[in-house]
Image (tube, rainbow, N blue to C red):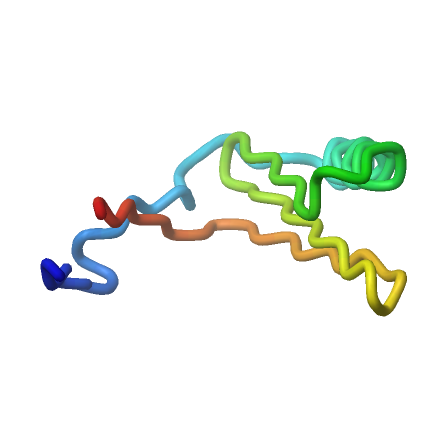
Length: 81
């Protein structure tokens, strides 16, 4: 297996200078994600990213819950397998 070097934060793209996303837009993204996860059985996550914000919803079928994470000014990197 090839070893991948993680170099936080230097190799991560910083979204903090992206357009600031309003609370209303975030709430809309959350509502959309909940609808998507409730109406389909095949998806267990929903992700929405724009500007300086990322919204992640994960569905736990065993507990019958959806967890919501909102990240503003986040950093992200890609790991190639």
